[in-house]
Amino acid sequence: MVQLTFHGAAETVTGSRYLLETDSARVLVDCGLFQGLKELRERNWNRPGFDPTTVDAVVLTHAHIDHIGYLPRLVKLGFRGPVWSTPATADLADILLRDSARTQESDAEYANKKGFSKHRPALPLYEDRDVEQTLRLFKTCDRGQWFNPAGDVFCRYTEAGHLLGSSSIETEIRQGPNPLRILFSGDVGRYKAPLYHDPAPPPPCDYLICESTYGDREHPPVAILDQLCDVVLASIRRGGVMVVASFAVGRAQQLIYLLRVLIQQGRIPELPVFIDSPMASSATKIFCEYSDEHDLSEAQLTGPDCILDARNVKLTPSAQESKRINSVTGPAVIIASSGMMTGGRILHHLKRRLPDPRNTVVLGGYMAQGTRGRDLKDAARFIRIHGEDVPVRAHVAEISAISGHAGRSELLRWLQPLPAPTKTFITHGEMTGATALAETLHRDRGWDVVIPKQGQTFVLEKRS
Ligand SMILES: [Zn+2]
Image 1: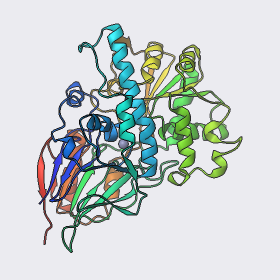
Image 2 (image 1 turned 90 degrees about the vertical axis):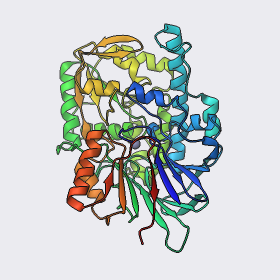
Image 3 (image 1 turned 90 degrees about the horizontal axis):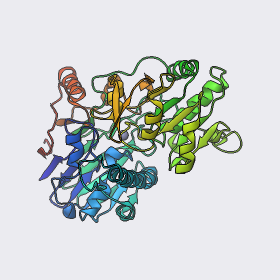
């Protein structure tokens, strides 16, 4: 018998964890952290709904924290099997998980020092040593090749176009001559996004697990460059600093690239760009290393003309250098993570810059419910940072085109070539997004579609 249980990203965007059980294997697909609403974050502290010591292997779609951030906790709870990913995902996981542990440790420390946490003492979910142990479990496989995480479960990665290394997972349960095929979409990227490859067409499957982040929303039809140009020029006119909350690897490099293009086209003046991240330099290095994962040429990445290392780009890995950015006056761009403003150095910049109406805060990617990013998007007048209510007087601009997620019609375009699966599970979306996508697939294509609930189990069978 084959069973699939949804232990996360069910009726919500974060916490992707899908447990696939066969007669001979238990494989967890993605192992993400819940983020956003307090009731979701608290789930990270609960037992995961299955015994981690009985899981044979984890297979990852990509390195975002809502897909890998629970791994060190799983290891802390006794998981010892291999963690499969593409090589780029493994390298990104290395810096992201360390960063995640550091963020949790310093948030807990800060909360204890200032006494604003309700938990006494505030504890990190995991520490650096748990991450070290986790990283030793990684095994990698390139896209296009089958690998065997455990028992009768075989997997193959295909390009998802969402982030360096990001992939969908084609899975076969090989119990007989006719294997049961399951496709995990992972996060699907955009078509014709600057720097990134298009998502590859999905292979046919019996069961599909599909994300729905933007299931009910389109990205604006404006070109990213034009949108960014308008926001930068408006920010310069106001005489303030532009703060961008962004994932430090991939999205940050894409922004630097786009700003460079605008400077070269003479549409915006030269201005300093700070990538404020302890992982800034390793991120750039990884980006250069995986040149087949993006469209920048060797010439654009090496030598004095390196786009990511141009004169105006300043990497600030140390806390000391980071603090110095506080005295920077505009025009300037500060890029810091986390993307949804749930933690990390962005919080210090927001605290400093939000109260001044001359500044601009840019929202790039998807902002989940309960995150500070979502509050800003919803025009909150105050946001809470480190136990303080910070007034929002800065201008808040949205450049959703820079999101790594396919908009609604791009998701439908990705699904277009797929013959009807036996059943489709819509996950990784808030209810509005998941429902909109489910209804469209049911109405227009006659598909059997389900939005699974947290903890719900389904038996998967080969239709003969
Ligand atoms: Zn993602």
